[in-house]
Image 1: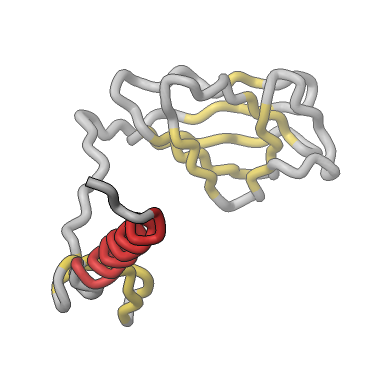
Image 2: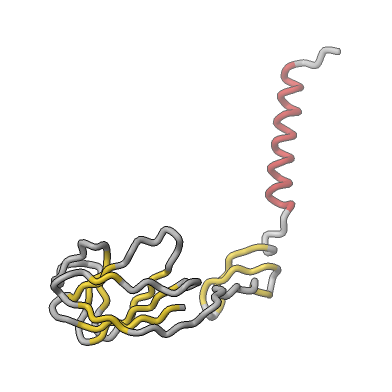
Length: 146
């Protein structure tokens, strides 16, 4: 049976148009949507109920000690306990720079923890070693492993 070329092209265009319309209107637009609530951005399912959020699982919560961080050489952040996901480092007495083993002293280095504040280091299997070095004087770094 012979079907004219323009008829086949018309059927193809009609099928493509129908598929795009079904994709556009087939799913409920409010079923999965990004929304803003009083508390900020959230991911929603349905029209009124937010998705549950999962906490970061951990087996231990260890408040570890402190380290003295000087300016003469970079100090390796102590090896965290097994199952540690985040290490919070707080700088006391002086600000400290952090980075690779070549981390310098001085206030020109952009990666630092200000005196009296903390920095969270999120750990993974590929996280490089973290070194600390005082910016202008010797300070104390307190660690909290989670």
